[in-house]
Amino acid sequence: MTTDVVILAAGQGSRMKSTLPKVLHPLAGKPMVQHVVDAAKSIGEATLHVVVGHGAERVEKTLSDQNIRFALQKEQKGTGHAVAQTLENLGDGPVLVLYGDVPLIKSETLAALLEKVDDDHLGLLTVTVDDPSGYGRIVRENGAVTSIVEQKDATDAQKAIQECNTGILATTGKKLKQWLPALSSNNAQGEYYLTDIIAMAAGEGVAITTAEPMNEHEVQGVNDRVQLAHLERIHQKAQAETLMRSGASLADPNRIDVRGRLSVGQDVFIDVGCVFEGDVVLEDGVHVGPYTLIKNSVIKQHTVIAAHSIVESAQVGEEATIGPFARLRPGTELADQAKVGNFVETKNAKVGKGSKINHLSYIGDAELGSDVNVGAGTITCNYDGVNKHKTLIGNGAFIGSNTALVAPVDVGHGATIAAGSTITDRVSEDALAIARGRQVEKNDWVRPAKK
Image (cartoon, rainbow, N blue to C red; front, side):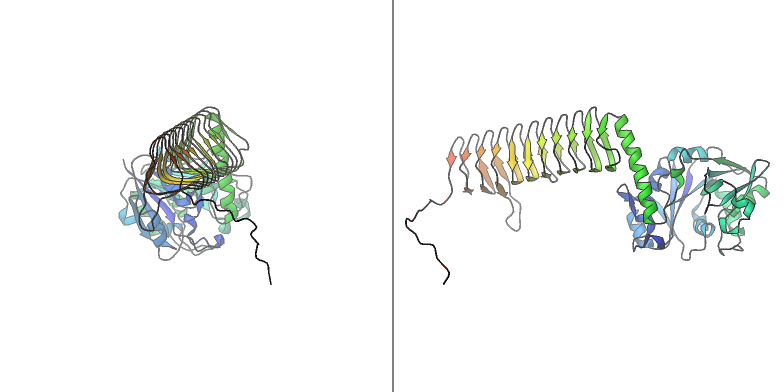
């Protein structure tokens, strides 16, 4: 049966001190609400409803490509009022209510909560904490849940209860359509509390089953940037532990950021301060130096990436060497044993097996054969102000330092280009090309002096 998942994302988040809607603040490189959407999608067949309010247009735009139904809460009158905005689009089957600022909730927890939900059973996610301040308290009689009391409405005895409401619950659309219109705002906040349906359910004899998350942080919400940073580190610690159990060694598990999916082989080493974005694969024996950024790239076995390098949308072969301070831009393909050294930038470039670009060069829109040597300060002049043009360099070519290759241009196999040349025409195979002005020397020349 299809589950309707209602995600509440209408709050302003004033404590974030930001013009960005709270639920769009990123955790691990993606908006908090996206984490919740992803968890909801993984529980099985589901129809997603997101309730928007403050910054509605920005939230809808961010999630616009994900087959989500949006409901607008024009006035923020509480959680019960928010869920009520979705009633006309809900079926009579299971309904799960989540929060866009509770980003670390796990699909396994949600599946367990939904397991026994029907018209005669309501599922409630609770958590037991040492300090329950600020939480709604779970009130039980003879072990059965009878109601939830918010902190501001609780008596002293109720404030001592340590079992707390997470806000996450599951029931049926049929029951919500019955209970939500009956909610009252007669409370300290003057709001329509979703939690009041617990007492309604208990009064009707609907059994209230509870479940707890594996970890408290699953249900922790974000109200300010301090709490967001706290959850970020919890999430990154979990990512680091997964990587280490998969065969990677981390110089410091507290200093790594995975903002996407990182797959590692055996005996991978990752130094401090590295950031991984999008989909990244590090095969067996890859070594990543400190403060390196890798995004949407595949790094084959036993490649070494030295410190402070950037690799984006690139394919890197086996036993290659990159950096330090190298930048591989989108479209770069390095073959096995290729080398891109310090302060070298490549873009849309194919570098053949064993070829070397060691220092201070820019290679863009180019194809290099195998065993090419590119001297320091070499650039491919690939852009004429309107169009990009290609440079082709054959196997075994030697490009002298400070060479400008003005594309489109073709350098033949085994060719040598003298240092300081500007190459505008094809260079034949095994030829030496010299394209620079002759050196002129004037003896006894007097240097100008200030008057």
